[in-house]
Length: 350
Image 1 (tube, rainbow, N blue to C red):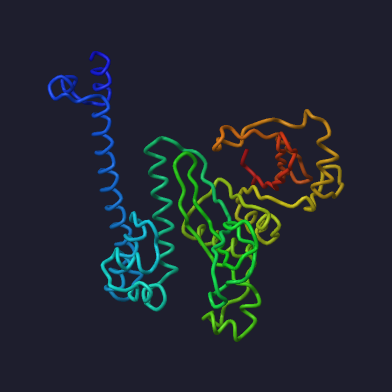
Image 2 (cartoon, helix red, strand yellow; image 1 turned 180 degrees about the vertical axis):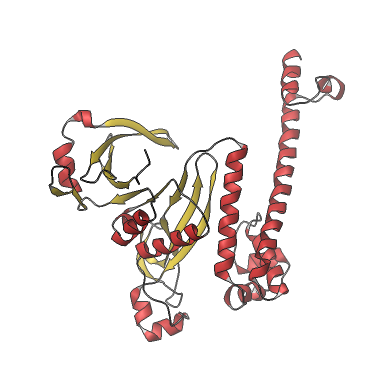
């Protein structure tokens, strides 16, 4: 009982509780976990109400704003499968007509709403990091996500590689920008669907999918410029932005970041060209062969904890002719697979 009493005092439970009420240490932990869950639930409800109040100015009609609130509540509920019918049932509607009207035809300012949500999400993560006294890095993580779709009438749908399926399939792709707070959490703060050029240039296909006449074709790299520009306009700041080859190979995106003094770490292909301090212009593959033959150029470090423990890789840092640009090479210790990252460090940063 002595050790149990000590544990009870650690969590603020009176040491006499076990003796007087028969409450064990495990019972006490359960009570506190339930209380913590209730506090978290109340906080979530309060935060959601604050966000919806901020969004009120984005809606023309009060009824539309109110239904948007019910729709959001259904999305964050414990409904196992979210579709039009399950959401309608959750919000108390007999059919999904009202939700479909909200998403398809109701008048509301989606751009302004996204701006409110973006600032709200970033502020929440920043506040959580401050409470935990964890400054950590703030990272913008560019990536595209595929969503399988059947048929041919959905806007942007075509046969393409779908990461979620791991193969070529019918679906759509959307460029996403999450706001990542190291050791705290992350939130999606920007998204823009990629529309194939043939859907925009074909009047029949464009009309059938309901595309606005002013829509212009944008590559995924250009869409990344758009979502990052929106984030900067709302005052968001990233320590660095990361992304895969789709973004690293986009010259326009790299120039956009550099014009904004934004540090980045972007994957590039082995054929990506770099200028070395010697004056030679080589592909990344050629530079690696030339400069990393000496094993002392490699340093083994962990890329973080995975499902099977620490993920150890060998890393090499290759200088370029520019003091602000480097090539970061990651090598798999067992199979030797390489991942190449083109890095930009603005002036004044370590």
